[in-house]
Image (cartoon, helix red, strand yellow):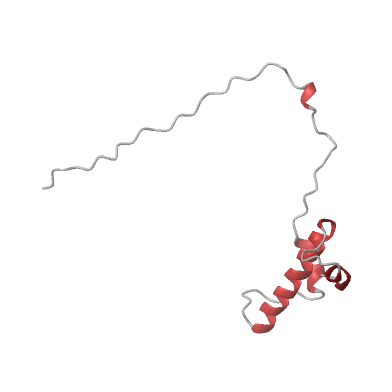
Length: 96
């Protein structure tokens, strides 16, 4: 968290910077885990933040080739209703 934001009284990073703040936090945690010997995998070479940034999930959605709902048929499709099988939870009362 930058010191100028702390001086303004903010406790959390701005929404626009949340992903970068999470990456930096993850890099610090990963360094701590590797330095303390708790990691079960080998330490990646190079910058830890760059390694995490490379593997982080990015919620980017493709806009090309997306079919608009207005082009779809207005007639709803008939899907079969899936029913659960019926089970009996009654225990057997007679034992041999």
